[in-house]
Length: 188
Image (cartoon, rainbow, N blue to C red; front, side, top):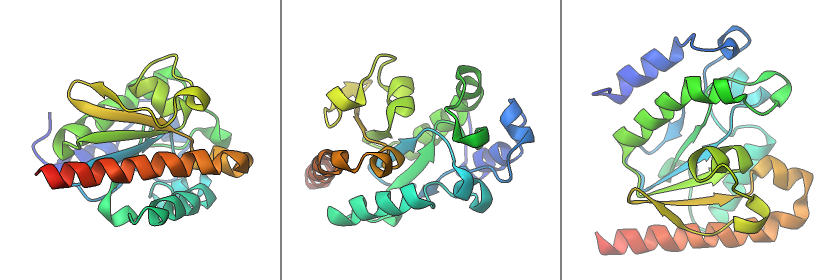
């Protein structure tokens, strides 16, 4: 357990727990408001993220920003992280052992931030955090409560770039996210 975000980040940046450490350019720790009621979690960094050291900065990140803006949110109002902090080669899905090696960092980020809700961006994150048999196409936009935290799975922005027909469904999910944030803020 970490007492500070700074120490957690320092340890994460020097991590050698799995093979991804040998192929990365930069660790992609996470970014955003550490007091946000919502944490967005993707699967892992892509090429642009690996080069910059920041999550969701490539084409998928630009789409994520547009979805956030469409519901009057900004990446500075939320916290964004990934299941794994290093890019899997050729953007393949992170292997189960890579996810296990890295999940402790995400758990500590969650513990220190204490968001009221987690939004899983894509299948890999939703299956790791919500349920191993989570189906994004069938269960996106549904709130599930786990240990007092609301969780939702939605389409990964990269998947929306490949299949733009799902963008309206993702936008509906983001409307639900914004409504929930407003509800939480109103009750505080």
